[in-house]
Image 1 (cartoon, rainbow over the protein chains, first blue to last red):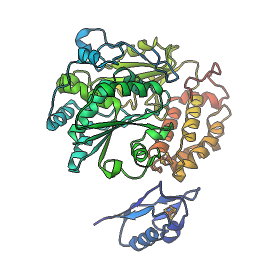
Image 2 (image 1 turned 135 degrees about the vertical axis):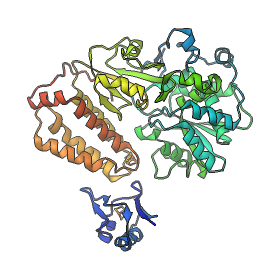
Image 3 (image 1 turned 45 degrees about the vertical axis):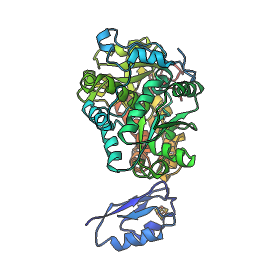
Image 4 (image 1 turned 90 degrees about the vertical axis):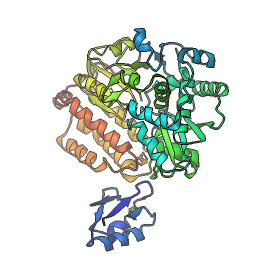
Length: 64
Length: 415
Ligand code: SF4
Ligand code: SF4
């Protein structure tokens, strides 16, 4: 079972909280918008990815 | 003939040999068909096909979308049928590419054909609702209304929705967003999943629909006798840029190495240095690649623009990029902030006193922006720029030596 981290770029408004919550999955570009390092989430990154998904105020992140 | 849409659009006559024009979309080049009787005289009645027959014909014809993405039409229909619910059909005539006129011309000259195609699509996906999604061009609107008042179908209702202008408003999710919320901006959800009123929605370009009506009449084999194996059927082109009559719409029946299709617009004003194909968010190609693009159908919305000798392709690309940057819907950071940041670097990188540093930051910015929008707008804008840098490599060298081929101030492509 693969888990994927998806970003709705239209909903995202660049709060950048996700990168703090999941530094191994997400970094920010020069304008403060997330760059997903790898969409594939494994057991090592799942906790972080879940945390970021929960914390995003715009609900722009989804795990599926 | 004027379309009343700012620029003259002329339908140039298709191939004059009658055998071929029997199968073509326009049949005879010139006539406006505003009257149902005239339409039926030219095309005959629309055969009464079942939903399965429609799907079969569209599939075996190999019809692809004529709005830009070139997606196989039968796959779109199949996806809607697989949802097992009543779908909605959107006939997209919003044609937001500034220089493209073929959809407007088609809606003016052949409104009945498009309506018939929309019926066929509706029958195939069991839709009872069709929306025409267009911009506010008075004559186009009037032409569709006049045709709709003459041609009705009992179990399908058709409505015309007029969207505000804007480059990205023609995107299919923007069309659905407008029909649902009056906001003509792209969304994250796909029309086929969550479309108009939540129903699975298929958005077809108006030429794609007209081609369906043509296929219903002539059959898929005859349709395939036009075009190429990789790009079956004829297609409408808008000829633009360095031709004597920019804005001419012509039906391309068979790609030809001699580019006689340009003759429809009076020919090129000077030896073509390159072509801009597929719109302002399309790509520049050297002359020898145009035939290949026609043969494999990678013509996007069908815009073919000549960059004539005496023009500077890099100047053109910069201006087009500036236009595209201004058309960001400002919903996604990399598009909203990235495109203007990149635009600001272009003069220092591609002008006549280029610095290596600016060139490097342009390359870096392109990499940072591409693929990171909610829709494909930033990808298209950066791909256009990349194609210009590749196609006009000689001009890049000239600029590095502080020279430029631009002979006059006159821009080739207007924004
Ligand atoms: S927390 Fe949410 S809104 Fe903020 S940058 Fe990350 S994805 Fe975007
Ligand atoms: S990528 Fe640009 S044009 Fe597309 S939805 Fe985002 S902001 Fe709008």
